[in-house]
Length: 191
Ligand SMILES: [Zn+2]
Image (tube, rainbow, N blue to C red; front, side, top):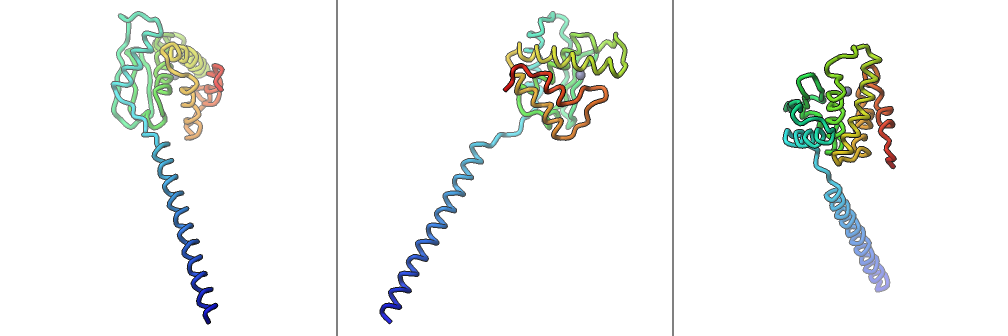
Protein backbone atom coordinates (compact mmCIF):
# COMPACT_ATOMS: atom_id res chain seq x y z
CA UNK A 1 0.00 0.00 0.00
CA UNK A 2 2.82 2.35 1.03
CA UNK A 3 4.67 1.58 -2.20
CA UNK A 4 1.49 2.25 -4.19
CA UNK A 5 1.00 5.66 -2.50
CA UNK A 6 4.57 6.81 -3.13
CA UNK A 7 4.34 5.69 -6.75
CA UNK A 8 1.14 7.68 -7.19
CA UNK A 9 2.74 10.70 -5.54
CA UNK A 10 5.78 10.39 -7.78
CA UNK A 11 3.60 10.08 -10.87
CA UNK A 12 1.59 13.14 -9.82
CA UNK A 13 4.78 15.09 -9.22
CA UNK A 14 6.16 14.12 -12.66
CA UNK A 15 2.80 14.96 -14.23
CA UNK A 16 2.94 18.43 -12.69
CA UNK A 17 6.53 18.92 -13.86
CA UNK A 18 5.67 17.85 -17.42
CA UNK A 19 2.53 20.02 -17.61
CA UNK A 20 4.40 23.00 -16.13
CA UNK A 21 7.23 22.52 -18.63
CA UNK A 22 4.83 22.32 -21.57
CA UNK A 23 3.01 25.44 -20.38
CA UNK A 24 6.30 27.27 -19.88
CA UNK A 25 7.46 26.34 -23.41
CA UNK A 26 4.11 27.49 -24.82
CA UNK A 27 4.39 30.79 -22.98
CA UNK A 28 7.94 31.25 -24.22
CA UNK A 29 6.95 30.46 -27.83
CA UNK A 30 4.02 32.87 -27.58
CA UNK A 31 6.32 35.55 -26.21
CA UNK A 32 8.92 34.97 -28.97
CA UNK A 33 6.27 35.07 -31.72
CA UNK A 34 4.71 38.24 -30.27
CA UNK A 35 8.07 40.02 -30.07
CA UNK A 36 8.93 38.81 -33.60
CA UNK A 37 5.66 40.14 -35.04
CA UNK A 38 6.14 43.48 -33.28
CA UNK A 39 9.73 43.80 -34.51
CA UNK A 40 8.88 42.79 -38.10
CA UNK A 41 5.71 44.91 -38.32
CA UNK A 42 5.90 47.32 -41.24
CA UNK A 43 3.25 50.03 -41.17
CA UNK A 44 1.37 50.41 -44.47
CA UNK A 45 2.93 52.96 -46.82
CA UNK A 46 0.99 56.19 -47.20
CA UNK A 47 1.18 58.33 -50.33
CA UNK A 48 0.82 61.91 -49.09
CA UNK A 49 0.78 65.12 -51.10
CA UNK A 50 3.88 66.33 -49.25
CA UNK A 51 5.75 63.11 -50.04
CA UNK A 52 4.81 63.16 -53.75
CA UNK A 53 5.83 66.81 -54.10
CA UNK A 54 9.12 66.27 -52.25
CA UNK A 55 10.04 63.39 -54.57
CA UNK A 56 8.92 65.31 -57.67
CA UNK A 57 11.15 68.27 -56.69
CA UNK A 58 14.16 65.99 -56.28
CA UNK A 59 13.49 64.19 -59.56
CA UNK A 60 13.02 67.42 -61.50
CA UNK A 61 16.34 68.68 -60.16
CA UNK A 62 17.97 65.36 -61.08
CA UNK A 63 16.58 65.60 -64.62
CA UNK A 64 18.58 68.77 -65.24
CA UNK A 65 15.54 70.40 -66.82
CA UNK A 66 15.02 74.15 -66.47
CA UNK A 67 13.30 74.93 -63.15
CA UNK A 68 11.38 77.71 -64.87
CA UNK A 69 9.74 75.18 -67.17
CA UNK A 70 8.65 72.86 -64.36
CA UNK A 71 5.11 71.63 -64.84
CA UNK A 72 2.74 71.47 -61.85
CA UNK A 73 1.97 68.21 -60.08
CA UNK A 74 -1.42 67.44 -58.56
CA UNK A 75 -2.06 64.86 -55.87
CA UNK A 76 -5.64 63.58 -55.80
CA UNK A 77 -6.81 61.97 -52.57
CA UNK A 78 -8.79 59.13 -54.11
CA UNK A 79 -8.47 55.38 -53.80
CA UNK A 80 -7.38 55.00 -57.41
CA UNK A 81 -4.23 53.16 -58.48
CA UNK A 82 -3.04 55.59 -61.12
CA UNK A 83 -0.50 58.25 -62.00
CA UNK A 84 -0.16 59.97 -65.33
CA UNK A 85 1.52 62.83 -67.12
CA UNK A 86 -0.12 65.16 -69.60
CA UNK A 87 0.80 68.36 -71.40
CA UNK A 88 -0.31 70.41 -68.36
CA UNK A 89 1.66 68.49 -65.74
CA UNK A 90 1.34 65.33 -63.69
CA UNK A 91 -1.35 63.70 -61.58
CA UNK A 92 -0.75 61.15 -58.81
CA UNK A 93 -3.57 59.45 -56.91
CA UNK A 94 -3.00 58.61 -53.24
CA UNK A 95 -4.53 55.19 -54.00
CA UNK A 96 -1.13 54.28 -55.49
CA UNK A 97 -0.35 53.22 -51.90
CA UNK A 98 -2.19 49.99 -52.68
CA UNK A 99 0.72 48.87 -54.87
CA UNK A 100 3.62 50.92 -53.48
CA UNK A 101 5.62 50.04 -50.39
CA UNK A 102 8.31 52.72 -50.07
CA UNK A 103 9.76 56.01 -51.35
CA UNK A 104 11.97 54.19 -53.89
CA UNK A 105 8.95 52.67 -55.64
CA UNK A 106 7.07 55.96 -55.58
CA UNK A 107 10.13 57.76 -56.98
CA UNK A 108 10.36 55.26 -59.84
CA UNK A 109 6.69 55.81 -60.72
CA UNK A 110 7.01 59.61 -60.61
CA UNK A 111 10.34 59.40 -62.48
CA UNK A 112 8.62 57.41 -65.24
CA UNK A 113 5.90 60.04 -65.59
CA UNK A 114 8.45 62.84 -65.51
CA UNK A 115 10.33 61.14 -68.35
CA UNK A 116 7.13 61.20 -70.43
CA UNK A 117 7.18 64.99 -69.96
CA UNK A 118 10.89 65.55 -70.66
CA UNK A 119 10.76 63.22 -73.68
CA UNK A 120 7.77 65.23 -74.96
CA UNK A 121 5.57 62.13 -75.11
CA UNK A 122 2.79 64.14 -73.47
CA UNK A 123 2.57 66.34 -76.54
CA UNK A 124 1.73 63.39 -78.78
CA UNK A 125 4.18 64.46 -81.43
CA UNK A 126 5.03 60.93 -82.55
CA UNK A 127 1.53 59.56 -82.92
CA UNK A 128 -0.48 57.23 -80.75
CA UNK A 129 -0.11 53.83 -82.43
CA UNK A 130 0.09 51.07 -79.84
CA UNK A 131 3.62 49.97 -80.76
CA UNK A 132 4.83 53.60 -80.56
CA UNK A 133 3.22 54.03 -77.13
CA UNK A 134 4.79 50.77 -75.92
CA UNK A 135 8.17 52.02 -77.16
CA UNK A 136 7.62 55.27 -75.27
CA UNK A 137 6.82 53.34 -72.10
CA UNK A 138 10.11 51.47 -72.35
CA UNK A 139 12.00 54.74 -72.88
CA UNK A 140 10.20 56.39 -69.95
CA UNK A 141 11.14 53.44 -67.71
CA UNK A 142 14.83 53.79 -68.62
CA UNK A 143 15.09 57.58 -68.38
CA UNK A 144 12.83 57.63 -65.32
CA UNK A 145 15.06 55.12 -63.57
CA UNK A 146 18.07 57.33 -64.35
CA UNK A 147 16.35 60.31 -62.72
CA UNK A 148 15.38 58.09 -59.79
CA UNK A 149 18.94 56.92 -59.26
CA UNK A 150 20.37 60.43 -59.71
CA UNK A 151 17.92 61.80 -57.13
CA UNK A 152 19.32 59.33 -54.59
CA UNK A 153 16.65 56.63 -54.65
CA UNK A 154 17.25 52.90 -55.00
CA UNK A 155 16.09 51.64 -58.41
CA UNK A 156 16.65 48.02 -57.34
CA UNK A 157 14.09 48.50 -54.57
CA UNK A 158 11.89 50.68 -56.75
CA UNK A 159 11.56 48.16 -59.57
CA UNK A 160 9.90 45.70 -57.15
CA UNK A 161 6.78 47.73 -57.91
CA UNK A 162 6.47 45.78 -61.17
CA UNK A 163 6.61 42.49 -59.26
CA UNK A 164 3.71 43.70 -57.09
CA UNK A 165 1.69 44.49 -60.23
CA UNK A 166 2.48 40.99 -61.49
CA UNK A 167 1.55 39.34 -58.18
CA UNK A 168 -1.74 41.24 -58.01
CA UNK A 169 -2.55 40.18 -61.55
CA UNK A 170 -2.78 43.76 -62.83
CA UNK A 171 -3.29 43.47 -66.59
CA UNK A 172 -0.14 44.05 -68.61
CA UNK A 173 0.80 44.01 -72.26
CA UNK A 174 -1.20 46.17 -74.68
CA UNK A 175 0.09 49.72 -74.57
CA UNK A 176 2.57 48.89 -71.79
CA UNK A 177 5.42 46.37 -71.86
CA UNK A 178 4.88 43.38 -69.59
CA UNK A 179 5.52 43.88 -65.86
CA UNK A 180 8.32 41.34 -65.57
CA UNK A 181 10.01 42.63 -68.75
CA UNK A 182 9.97 46.13 -67.25
CA UNK A 183 11.37 44.73 -63.99
CA UNK A 184 14.17 42.94 -65.89
CA UNK A 185 14.99 46.04 -67.98
CA UNK A 186 15.89 47.92 -64.84
CA UNK A 187 18.45 45.39 -63.70
CA UNK A 188 21.26 47.76 -62.73
CA UNK A 189 23.38 45.06 -61.15
CA UNK A 190 20.60 44.41 -58.65
CA UNK A 191 21.23 41.32 -56.61
ZN1 LIG B 1 4.06 55.55 -69.01
